[in-house]
Image (cartoon, rainbow, N blue to C red; front, side, top):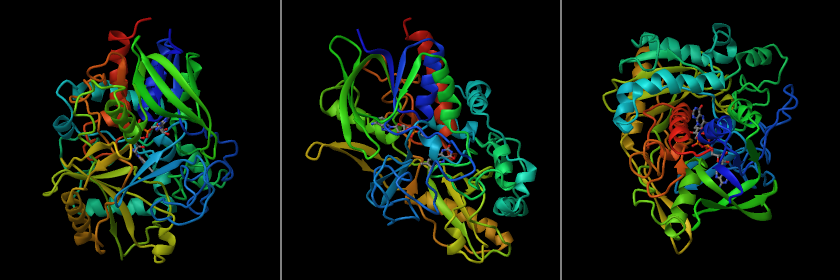
Length: 501
Ligand SMILES: Cc1cc2nc3c(=O)[nH]c(=O)nc-3n(C[C@H](O)[C@H](O)[C@H](O)COP(=O)(O)OP(=O)(O)OC[C@H]3O[C@@H](n4cnc5c(N)ncnc54)[C@H](O)[C@@H]3O)c2cc1C
C-alpha cells in the first residue's frame, strides 16, 4: 500500500500538465509544491505580489537581501517569495516558485520552435508533425493564449515593440505567419499567455498597471498573466483526483524495496522554517521540480544509493538556450523601454552567420531612470548553441555543483543581429550581457537518462516531465511551451502504456 497512487513534485509547466492528465484519468495524485498559492483578490491594487518598484519579501525565495538582477541589495523580509535566484559562479539562474511554478514569473511568451532546429536537438522518436498538430496547439488552447491585438500594440506602452518591428522590417525581415517558417528570417506575432482584456482594463485605469508597467518577474497583480494555477492546475483540482499541497519542500526521493517510491518532505512556513517532516509513498513518481530541483534530487539519490541504477548520463546535457541580453541605445525614436510586456513579436534571424537566433523586446522598469531619454530597446536574444554543461555531486559538501560556461558565440550572434538592425535604423550596441537566464534545460535528458516518454531508464514508474527532460535547448525560443507540449506527449503515452487502474 502507498499513501497515494501518484506524486508530482513541483507545479510548473511539466508538473501542471502531469497533474491535469493524471487527474482526468482518475489517478489519485498529490502535487507537492514548496512555494505558496498566489491568489489575486484585488486586481485594482498591488495587493498580491511585490513589484520591481517596491520589492519586499514576496519578491524572492528566502532571501533577506534582494539578488534579482538589476535590483540587487535591497533589504527584504526573508520569505517564500516568487522568484528564486540561484547563483552558480558569476551566473544567475532564475526560477519561479509557488503554485504555477515558472508561470508566476514568466513573461507569457509561448512560442513554438521551428521543425528544422527541433529535429537537431530532440530524439528522432519525437515526431515534429505530431507536436505541431497535436501538442503545441493543445497547450496553447488550455492556457488560452493569443497574439497581441492591434489596439494594444498601438498604445504608448508598446512603443518600443512597434519600433523594434519597424526596424526589423526596414532591415529586410518580412512578416511570416509562423515561427515554423522553413528557417527563413522573419517577424512573427506569436501567441502570448496574456489576458489582453485585462491589459485593456489596465490601460483604462480599471485595473492596477502591471503588464503595461513591465512588471512580470515577481507576478502580475492585475491578473493579466494566464498563470498555470488559473488553467491547468485549476482544471486538475476540479477533477477531484488531484490535491496540491503547498509549502511542501521535497528533500529526498528513493525507490522502496517493496516497490514504488518514498518522498521525504520538509513542511515549511512562509519564513522557510521547517515546521514538520513527512515521508509520503506512491506507485508512480513524476519529477517536475524544474531543472535545478529535479537534477539535485535525482543526482543526490543516485549518489547516495537511493536510486543507484540511474545511468551516468544523469547531470549531463545542461544548456541555457544561448540566452543573452542586447541593448540598442541612442535611437532616434522614443521607445518607453520601461513600459509594456516582453515578447509578443519575435525577430527570427535564422540565417545569422554565427548562430541562428531569435530576438524579442524585454522592458524593465529601471530603464526609466537608466535611460532618461527613453530611446533604447532592451532585448533578449536566444541563440541555437550546442554548448552544454553538467551537474556533479560533491560528497564533501553534499551539494550538487554545476559546471557551465555560456557560449561566446551566442553573444557574437546577438551582437551581429543588434548591429544589423542598427546599421539600417541607427543606434549603438553596447557589449552583450549573458550572465542571467531563466531558460535552464537538461540534466535528465530524453534519449540519455530517460526515454522519449520521460521514463527514467532502470526504474519502473519513475518519470521526468519538466525542463530537465529537454536536451539542453529549446532551439532558440523560450522553453515553456516546449516543456508543456513534451509533457503532454509523455502523459498521453504513460497513461495508456504504464498506469494500472
Ligand atoms: C523570470 C522568468 C521569466 C520567464 N519567461 C518565460 C517566458 O515568457 N516564456 C517561456 O517560455 N519561458 C519563460 N521562462 C522560463 C520558464 O518559466 C521555465 O522554462 C519553465 O517554468 C520551466 O518549467 P518546469 O516545469 O521545468 O519547472 P518550473 O516551472 O520551474 O516549476 C518547478 C516547480 O517546482 C517547485 N520545486 C522546486 N524544487 C522543489 C522541491 N524540492 N520540492 C517541491 N517543489 C519544488 C518550484 O517551486 C516550481 O514551482 C521564464 C523564467 C523566468 C524565471
